[in-house]
Length: 276
Ligand SMILES: Nc1ncnc2c1ncn2[C@@H]1O[C@H](COP(=O)(O)OP(=O)(O)OP(=O)(O)O)[C@@H](O)[C@H]1O
Ligand SMILES: CC(C)(CO)[C@@H](O)C(=O)NCCC(=O)O
Ligand SMILES: [K+]
Image (cartoon, rainbow, N blue to C red; front, side, top):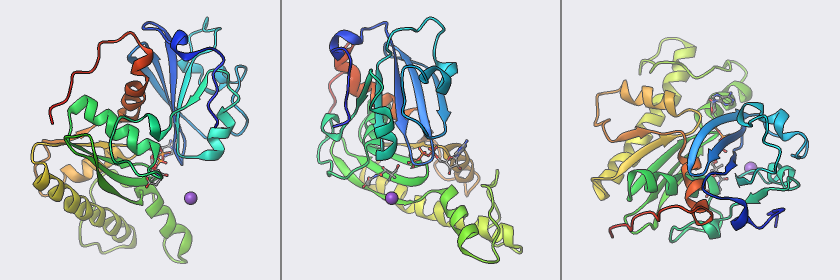
């Protein structure tokens, strides 16, 4: 158990207190600073190379901390990278969120905590049922129904990883960055052929999942998140003008999820009951 807290949590976090949320992904760290239930700023940093401590936190996230923040800031951690979790465990205010704390039904034991928190956050903000498409290192689909039950999902290599793997594992193909715009479907040069293959195939896959989801849950919100969400949304929108209206872009879902599981620690109005 990596969870640690210097002071009992329920006395530590009050409505107006500052606290930090840390989502540890496979590419990098995503930090959020909250004041009570308000997310005030976010910051992405590289993975830790040394154990997190009271001394080095201000150097790692200088822009998130106020100058006179001398006390131990509570740090709620959602990690899918065990080695990085270990590096945080010595920080006195650290507490690691586990699947057992997520108020969703039918979660399977190896489900990523980032997926659980993102879809919880999406449901709390936009309503259940909802589908989250998280375009990070891995790209995931995670769907929850109106009864807050995990319906299911899927995992595939993220956009960056798809480009990198072609560049690294072939002799003739270059390593390319994600293009800013949707490439033509039928390419006549190598660069556009790679871009087309990866992006149009992903779009087609997204259509498959989204159409099936909307068939089952016609009024559901679908939310795009993760490091590549902005570009993915642009590619999606540039396509054949499908019903884009209900595809939302929200890169703070996981922070909303972390806030939701931290709610018992705040003097905060309860979240309204859900309709089933
Ligand atoms: N500065 C950056 N560093 C790394 N990735 C970046 C950066 N800016 C944008 N990206 C994009 O973000 C994607 C990774 O997404 P994200 O940062 O959400 O991943 P992650 O949270 O670390 O991974 P995961 O949640 O899948 O474990 C990469 O494919 C890359 O294209
Ligand atoms: C799929 C990733 C890598 C996405 O960050 C993460 O959620 C994870 O490690 N998941 C574990 C496997 C699963 O979710 O079924
Ligand atoms: K692995």
